[in-house]
Image (cartoon, rainbow, N blue to C red; front, top):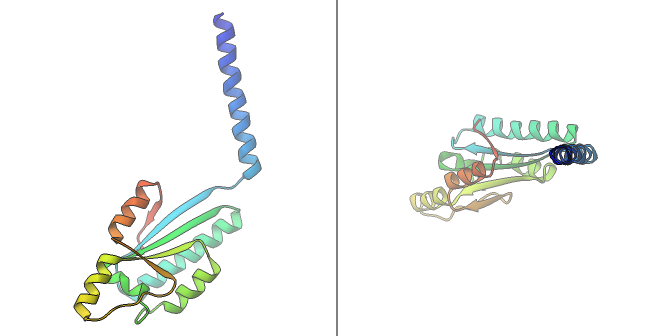
Length: 151
């Protein structure tokens, strides 16, 4: 009886291992989820972030893996996603066109404060969307297991 139970457990474990190996062989792909924080308002930091995104997307695409990328901009980094004065506005457009799984998220709290300070409505770049709070968005993604990068 003990032998039969041990044999059954070993059999189930072996079948599971084979099943997992076959599933991995069929798909052979890995999913990656990466969030970039942009909280500095200078063009070199923004360009470094965008360079990183292009490099990551190219590397994973070449290996057959998929990658989902989100940029969360807040504080001075919101400048990256502003339609009026972003030093990287043209790059946002070309990157979004060539890498569809990139999301550019602007902090709503920072946007509201900037609008109050400047006394005008601020439009985001068409490639950007607004989230309520940039720091909360970063925390939520990290809690879901996303890899966090701050260039």
